Length: 194
Image (tube, rainbow, N blue to C red; front, side, top):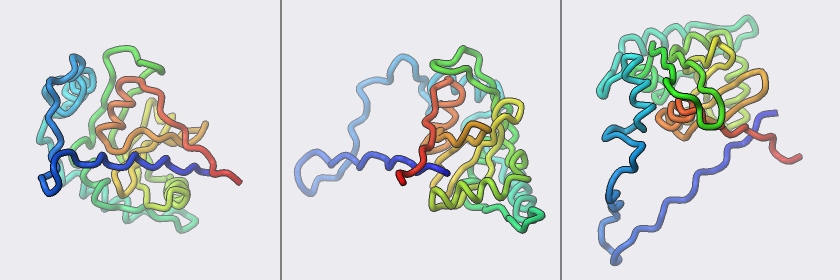
């Protein structure tokens, strides 16, 4: 049985006088472990070592993957979902082979390959996860030596599916990459109460 995702916390109430624009206060300074980019230093370093850079965008490759997934039908008739959040993740991070250069915080980080064709023959599995989460899910890539498939939903949330269960990696691709590269323990999706 697949699990339900915890709902994200509600947005903070705006501060300031009524009618004033709600702008988050800028941080006084970035914590030491962060660079001036959108990723923490070890994640940024791993991504750059893999060939990523800000502004990277290979939409041609992403569209080829989208076409291949749309064209695939399993022997039982299952098809893949393709949607903007998946195509955008493929365009920015597609074809990267990402490895961490440091030990993990809680678990050993696995090598990551962003290539949705690693999930080509898992249309039913991904469809089942999508139904359990009440959304659509598309393949994103693989963890390790294909011990797990990475998947993304229409909201951009990222999951890992392996022989032990389904795991929530982050609310978006950035959080998921941080979880994977830093070796943070992902949250296991739990079955709903009976």
